[in-house]
Each structure stands twice: as C-alpha cells, then as structure tokens.
Image (cartoon, rainbow, N blue to C red; front, side, top):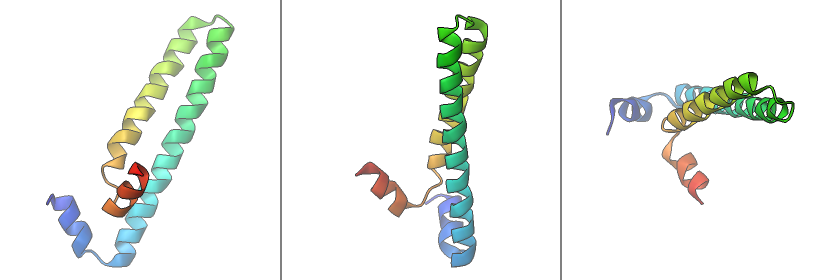
Length: 84
C-alpha cells in the first residue's frame, strides 16, 4: 500500500472527505477547461487559424493528461463505479 493510501485510511473521515472533494473539484475544472480548449481548437481550425488551433489542441492534451494523472488519487469505491 502506498504512503498516500495508508495515510488516507488513517486520516480522520472529515479530512479524507475534504481531500476527495478537492480532487473531484479539480477533475471537474480540468475537464471543463479541456472541453473549452477542444471547442477553441475546432473553431480555429474551421476559421483556418492553424497556429492557434495547434496551441489549443496541445493545451487540451495537457489537461487530459493532468486529469488522468489526478484520477489515480481517487478512492477505490469511486474508481469501481467509474469502471462499470
């Protein structure tokens, strides 16, 4: 068991709930920004502004990878619900 999981299991429930709320809030924020960048990419690609379209596409990828990285800190019950 990793140090993070062990400390999470030993922590007071309120602290754990606060941590999970923060992680979920960040995930929602990252996904929202990623969708915003995807629309910006599509809009700029349709207007043939390829320099800005490439920039927004890279930004969207950065937020996608940040979201995947952040999901490893979710507790196991939430991960099991996401897999179904």
